[in-house]
Image (tube, rainbow, N blue to C red):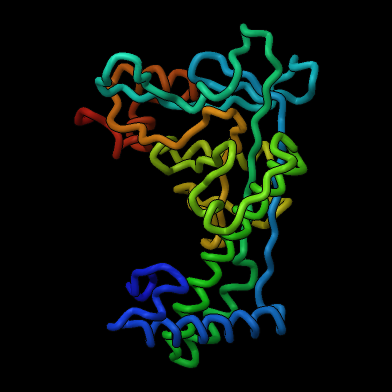
Length: 277
């Protein structure tokens, strides 16, 4: 897809127009992967954690231990505000965690993984050689490896670390179609558009120490070929698009996060249904 040769593997090889080019790309990518493995050119590192948690309104309290007396951090979620048909609720990610007042002991997970350790040296080598083809190939492969790492770790969490789906056995196609229980939403994506929540996750996981991933001032991850997010195990948990939200919720969200309304509007600019002053 990086080269805009759209189609599914391996059927794309039979495409009349660009099947041969797709096969060449595939072969070249595998040769580069072989070299990366043989010469240990890239390092992959990740961390995952499962923590006691309960929701309080649209927030999620994450506790230090099973006594649930000490709040490690509070995760803040946003709720859909668009008009819907009767019986179709406006969702927030906090809905997938048991409310504190229910007395139920629930949990939430988090992860951060990278496949980009050492990528700068490899990209510089290709740049110095004026080899744009392999420079783009290396970046594309590293991005895909980070996504594959996230997929593998999520499976390990479901089957072993959290263990709520110990007998799960899915084929690659089923994994790609997300035919498993639970979700792993990431900050900056449709259900959780606020990138600043990454800071809470990184604190919770001690992610910088455990993985080497750092956050920029705009909360982008470095190395770029990195993935992070939360784990929800509820059987009804699903991805959704937040959509546009009003100033009333932005004011409430800013209060909950301890930031000014102006700052909240800056980070939520793309989902506001009004023009900030």
